Structure formats: C-alpha cells, structure tokens
Length: 305
Image 1 (cartoon, rainbow, N blue to C red):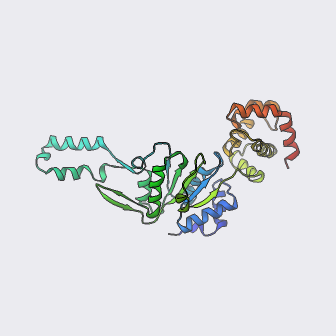
Image 2 (image 1 turned 60 degrees about the horizontal axis):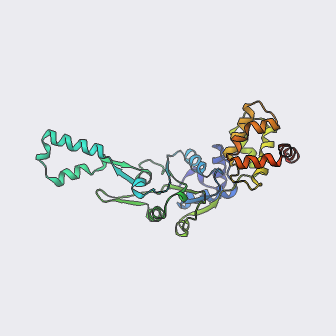
Image 3 (image 1 turned 45 degrees about the horizontal axis):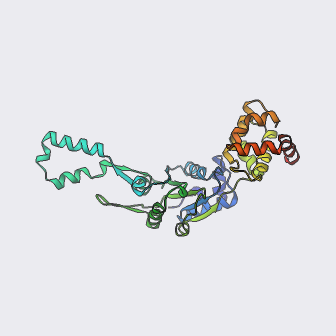
C-alpha cells in the first residue's frame, strides 16, 4: 500500500510541519523511506528531542490510528500481545453451568467456547498486526531500551514477518505492515540484529532556527523577540555539560512560563522564577546560577538575531 501524502521527502517534511512538527531534512528522508519501503524506523537520541512526537504527528498526518506500546523493565510478550479476559470466561462458565448447558456439551467444546476471540484482550502488538482499518496504523514502540533482552529478541522475530500465533486460536498476520516507530533514549545498547531490521536515525536537539520555528508554533502568544532569546539561551545551556540538558518540551514550557508571568524579555528575576520549567535537576540549576544569570542574558542579547 502506498500513501498518497508521502510521495516525496518534501511532502513528508511539509506534512509534518503542517501538524506543528518541524523535522530536519535527515529525519524527513528517513521517514519517507520507512513509509515507502515498509521498514521500521529506529529513532535514537537524548530524552526530550521529540522522538515520541514523531509517531504522534505521523499518525495524525496520515489520518490513521496510533497504537503505543510503552516499554519497561520486565515487559514480556504476553503483556505486549494479548491476554485472556478471565473474569468474562468465568462468568460464561458459570452461566453455562447455571443454564444446564454444561451437561449437554463435552469438555472440549466448552473449552473451545472459553478460548475464542470474544474473550481475547488485544494488547498493542496484536492490535497493530490484526488491524482492520483501511490504512495501516502507526505502531509506536516507545523507549525500547527500558525493556529486557528477551523482549527485544521476541520483537526481532515479530518484525521479520509481522505475524503472531496464539496457540488456542491460530495465526494472525498483517495484510500490510503497520508503520513501526521504535524509540530509544540509549540508556543501554539495543542489539545490532534488531537495528539491522530497521532504518536508523539519530534525533538531535534542534538548531537555533528550527527551535524558533517550534516555539512560534507551540507558544504563539510569546513575542518573537523573546522567542529568539529563549532559543539562543537554550542552545547555549545545552552546551554546558549538564546532567540533563533541556529538551524541546522544556524550552516550550519555559517560553510559556516566561510569558505567563508577564516577561516580554529575559531578566534575571524572570529566569529565577521560571528556571524549574527549563531545568529539572538541582545540580543543573546551580550550575547556571554559578555561571551567572547576568552572563546568560548578556550572551542571549549578543547572539540572538
């Protein structure tokens, strides 16, 4: 299946920008290839650079569903694929016994009734494989680096043929593969075998001009003068070897916080009052204070264009 909206790299870039997301040319190219080659895309980068948002805006732009699997330590295949609704199965069993039907059918027939699709709870991976909509969904496998090696090995098998077998029912196979977006914050290395199944793109923090585009779209009430100073200040702060450099979401929060307290320009009082929107670790805040808020503002005025 081909997507009429995604027939060129430029159309992908324009489409995502129309959703308020401003991808780099490299990311737009990788997404174009992922869609048209029907290959998963593996997005790696620091937290807060917009990896998860890619899947959200992609599903919105393509007008299809977003199915999200949030990874965590201890996640196993059963929680990601399916489970049985035991309460409904038990209710069905009791109803069968109360009505006297249980005496009229054999044990195998009763078991078959309990293990059919009406009692099947589809989890994200099965939802994506057995999707019935006209347009395949976007499957977001978020923060894969949090999951264990065993789940990663299972995912490798799933992505090879986009099929799942449930012993009691049979095989489910995707007619057209979902658009798979896998993200990682690189807290650990993901196995090379999985990466080989995917197209790869490193998502970096936006540069000065792209950050301005993002802030204008996400914080429209903030003046352009203040947005430029915020963008150059955040760019500078990211170069200061902090424990957790601010991501795009933090720069948006900071812009909105400064505007909400009535600041039309950067001031020491304004930065002090809103720094918690930008930096989420005490050590990072102290580092900025030690550097000097007056110097931060001076640098912003000197570099903003």
